[in-house]
Image 1 (cartoon, one colour):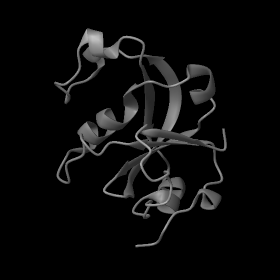
Image 2 (spheres, one colour; image 1 turned 180 degrees about the horizontal axis):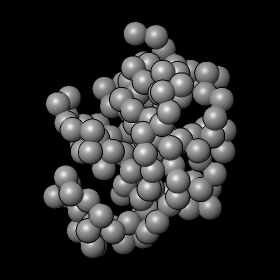
Image 3 (cartoon, rainbow, N blue to C red; image 1 turned 90 degrees about the vertical axis):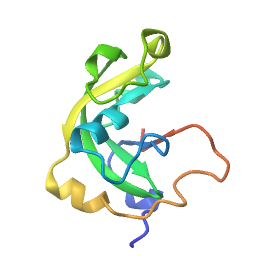
Image 4 (cartoon, rainbow, N blue to C red; image 1 turned 60 degrees about the horizontal axis):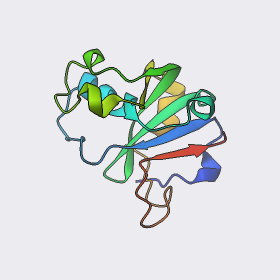
Length: 129
């Protein structure tokens, strides 16, 4: 598997790790919902991200175009039963869709072991923002 480095990323992106929510056989909808929310982000900084790279098992699983950010709302999720109003308080979710094939082909299935510092617990990293 080809390795992705921060230098390879030329667009403004958020790297979003979802190790606890990821399941190899999950549906596209479930993968999208796991990636798009519910996050503690700086909304002013996050709004500058063009794409979200979903990372699990040390590789990019999918890439989404970020259209906008909204305060998180558990009623916006069909596949997640782990969300409550209290858990969503002060958190954000993005609205978006799967990225075009030319962007996806650049990132999907690339290895990402060096994209986060060792021991870093925060699941989000900003690149080119």
